[in-house]
Length: 308
Image (cartoon, rainbow, N blue to C red; front, side, top):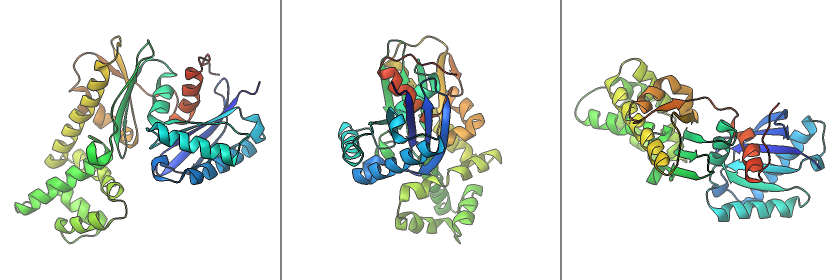
């Protein structure tokens, strides 16, 4: 029985792929082009997956038939129809290679807690919380995209920065954060940011690139940035609370913060935690989402998850 797997954590901008054995020993790891499967032709996704499989097996000194299953944990894979279309396209392109598609949040949760109980709070360009209890029950909150949700995400931080800086500008007030935005976008005044946003090919991504400026200004004591991050902490805590209500979790409830905002965990963790009633413990992930994709598959198949 072949017990090698490829796990792929595919976001919109990059994909991290690993080739592991059944004991989760990593035999190859590479970074590839990103893919949001809800916004791409399934045949394009299948072509990219074929390249990833060929590349990783070559690097590990294997052939594609040495891989029992490839698990794609992808942004935009929330709808069953999307997952089925990608799997069908993969079967058409490479019928001898088995591909399973799951959500990126599912993989992050499995990797963080090695298939066990806990809550993963993902805040990158968007935001979502996924939780699992010891009964195997899974609950999510958020993840509705920038038009309907994404509270506390990188996009939300950037949008709030622009909204509040524009409001201050029209009151005749100057802010340090507006100055930073004008500097990075090369604007003579913050009002011109409106044109930049609405003329951008991908407005959500353009706005999200401002998130690091909010953290920079926060560290410098800018009152506007302090307000924004305090509100973000509250919004992200609400995602955690909503998830917890649907689960039976023992205290302390374990939470893993991941995504782009996780790089600012020292700032965000206390801002989130102050809005969480009860006992919570923020913990690092045991594995990243690429390995988590393999763990999610093994858990769903009721395979024992062991590690080297």
